[in-house]
Each structure stands twice: as C-alpha cells, then as structure tokens.
Length: 362
Image 1 (tube, rainbow, N blue to C red):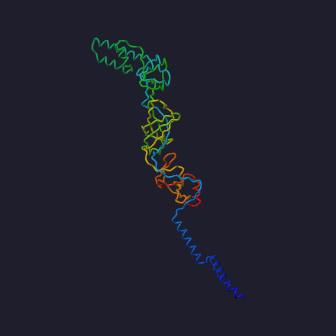
Image 2 (cartoon, rainbow, N blue to C red; image 1 turned 180 degrees about the horizontal axis):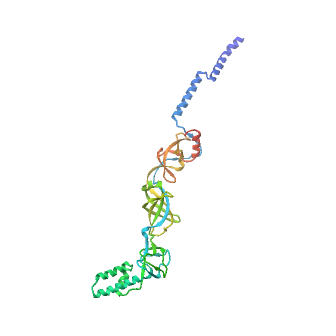
Image 3 (cartoon, rainbow, N blue to C red; image 1 turned 45 degrees about the vertical axis):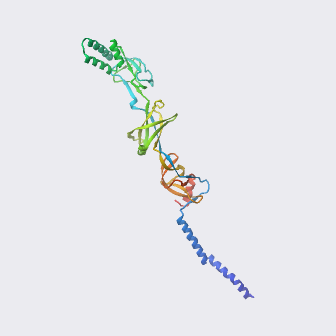
C-alpha cells in the first residue's frame, strides 16, 4: 500500500523540486526570460532620449515665425538746439530808456521791439550820416556816404531807420533793439534804466520749433546703433508720439556712468516739448521674419538656454538645449535648436526643471 502511494506522489515531488530550482535562479527557462527582458530594457534605453513625465497643469505653445523688428528702449532729456539759441548784444554802449521785453520767458516774434536805448556813439553816427548826405549834395562824395551808411548798419541800426534818416534828414535820439529770431526769452540781463556795454549779453532767445533729445546709451548698445532705423519718442503726460531722426553720436563717453550720448532731432512746431523734459525713445530695426518663442518658455542654467520639447508620447517632455537672443519684452528669437511648429512647454518650468534634476537628465 505504501509503495503505491509513493508512486502516485512521485510526479508531484518532481514538479515541486523543479519549481524550487526556478525560484533559486537555476531554472533554464527562467534564466532565458530574464535575459531577454534585460536586453529589451537596454535596447530601449539606448534608442529613447531621457524624458520627464508631467500630466497636469502643463500648457504648450508652438514655435512660430513672425514679421517683427527688434526694439530697444532708452531714456534721455529734451534740450534746445544750439543753432536755435541767439544772444542779443549790441556793438555799442548805452542806457535803456524803455524795456519792451520786460519779463523772462516771454514769447517774441522776429522783428519785435525788445528795448529802446540811448547810445551817444550811435547818435553821433546818425549825425555823421546826415552830414554826409548834405555834403554829398554839394560835392559828390559817394565813398564817404557809403562808409557812413555801413557804419550805421554795423552798429545795429535797422535798414528801415537808415532810410528814414536819409529821407527826413533827421536822426532819432533813441535806437530800438529788435528780436533777430522768433522764440522765447530764456535770459534777460537788463531792466529799464540799466546801462550796458558792447560786451554784455542783453537777451538770449531760443526757438523751439525743433528740439533735440539727448539719449543715454550703454557701451554695449553702441554696436547695434547702426541697425536702428526708426525712433519714436514718448513723453509722460503727452499723448502725441514724436518721430525722431539720428543727428549725432557724441564722440565721448561719461566716465562715471560709462554711457554715450546720442542726439535725436525732433520737429516741435506745436511746442509741446519743453527743454528739461524726461523722455523715452523706442528704437527699432528694419522688420524681418524671425523665429520666436515666449520668454516664459525658456530657462537658463549654467549659461545655457533650455526649453522642454513635447514628444510624441502624451505627457512626456524632453529638455532641449537651444540658442536664443532677446527680441522684446515678450519674446526670444531662436537662432538654433527649434523649427516652426515645434511644441514646447510654456509654463510650469520650475516643476519641469525639478523633475529633470531628480531624474539626472541634465
């Protein structure tokens, strides 16, 4: 009876022994399966790039090409043009009888009377001219007459007054000083009753039909100056946007700030711009096609720019090294690494970067 029982249990004992060997790693079929699985994993790791997986709160954006121009923003001040500043002086000494331009910053037009003055020198020159006219009627002396007329002109006597003297043979005791240009009186150095000499500046008149903007540029911005073609000047509190033209780059830098000064010329016929105003200028290059991505889609690590490129597998993103240049306050220009239509992560970059470091992707 025992013999028949052992014969019946023998297959079960053999199967149990075989299972124990497989569990111990001595089973031939189990070794083959393990080997195949390992080789498959190695094969996959060599062909597929390392990625990270994010399934939630990830927004992507397509790389696109746009027609745009690079913009550069700088600041500066509005100043009066040197050529629009005129000093009013006389080539004689005298006294102020009546002051017409009696207040500072008064607006005057060309030819307006600024002051009525008395000058012994001018009065004597007028008398000499009358004497020359009378003498020339008796004895022809055109050279003497011409010389007396030129002297009056050089002393600042108007052509109209000279002609009046010639016709009436009468000299006015006083001489009028007229405005040589239209503009604003920015400096007044005489009052009624003041004395003056031929070296004294009586007034300074500035015309503001055209003004300059002196723009401060950092040293590294000078290399792109030739590329900038359009300049739009904006002033806080003024809705008008002014077009400006490059006039001169000053051939010296401020050693304290390491900044250069660019002079822009602006039409100011409405006289909205005043010297001393703080202004902002938007300078742009000629428009062209550029490959761009949002600034929020790029991350800089150790001097290298990275983006996270969407792969063909949903939720998997590959960190990709790219080369970028700043374009404006919203975009980077892509110079290497991406093409039109690539989808990249536009947000959650910190989360992506953390996962990439944890997985030792870079």
